[in-house]
Length: 310
Image (tube, rainbow, N blue to C red; front, top):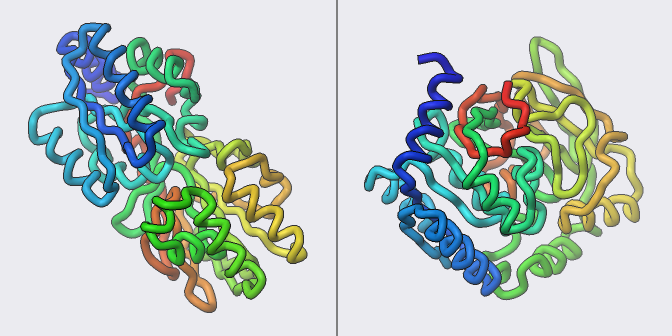
């Protein structure tokens, strides 16, 4: 069956069966409240809803596989970029449709898809949108939806205990980051892509599959639809500039990424001296060296009708 026919059939089945699993990252009262409101609206639209509120993200993968085993094909996740990216393995290259309720801080992937950040707007997309197939990034066996950070942000993600995150939220990263920032030094980065090698010293590497980093629109042709990754490096900056950029990254505020050195590629191997931690959309994974590729059209996701699905 051709790609467009598969998407049409998935959408037809979702609207006909009106059966959906909703999994909410409910570590905050806000997440619980918005999750309950979302389920109420879906039920009012005559959907049979299987609702799940997760307070421990370590069990998220198990819960997703559980609802898949129960036959659910349309699965809505409520959370931030970390929740979405840590779940992509379950959806990648399978006839499952992801629905997104953007309940995080940056909501970069939702922005890249044109999904409204309000609860009512996101629910309009879930109830009236269309099924699109979009690219995922891949590092080793791990998929990521939007962004990979290597360097200071990765070190910060690895160095922040989960208990501290739960207790302080974003301020946990501020606490750990300030301790790391003043002793952080640029590291050697080597990029090998298509037979070419680039070498530079940088504080941070950002590898983007989507168009947004928090509120910041990325430069180049970053897109979840163009089968390419965009690689940014944060090179010659002062310690004050580094602190300002780091806080903007942390809070997912507007950052002048378009002016940073960057290149586009379908695949790249990243080596660093010394080895650096890798942070996938807010979820810590492995260290460098690592090989990054694009998984074309690997994810079915519900998007607005006006989204340009290629």
